[in-house]
Length: 199
Image 1 (cartoon, one colour):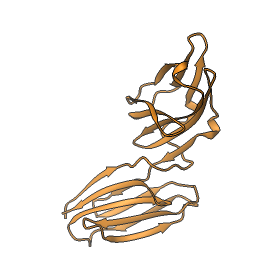
Image 2 (image 1 turned 30 degrees about the vertical axis):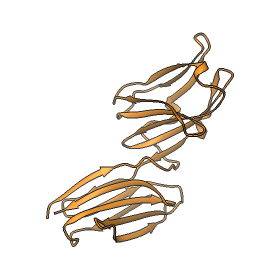
Image 3 (image 1 turned 120 degrees about the horizontal axis):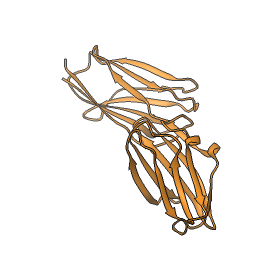
Image 4 (image 1 turned 45 degrees about the vertical axis):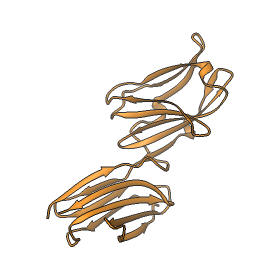
């Protein structure tokens, strides 16, 4: 039986976990000499990443891509950020870091302790058709793992506690050939989706 595995990460939900950049390595500050707001990293990023800035209503006002092993440094006119609350997001294939900040009278401020960080689940399918789901979550919120076939019928569904790291194995060697979708959900929010084809 031939097995192919394709992984898609769904960028939803948050929990207090480490993505590939620590919020302490992100600076959001005001340069009073040029009257600009600066977003920059103090270290190079490990993986290619997407950076976005959105207002408190979720309207995206800026986005850019950063290459692996590069620093990021972006500068805006202070007047381009009216007084209000904003959200800076750093997302890569490993996880996502969200850092809220406030603009007021041409100045910005933020608290690193307010950052929300998420690490995506790791899903691996071994040569002997063993599906391993590793979700190192410590949020205490239950996680549902579900596998559906190509008609949308559930093959299995299990709700796991996350008061400790979750690592579960599922044998797929007896499943019929076809397409399957594995989803990892937390409080009805999909945080990971994996398409599996068995031949």
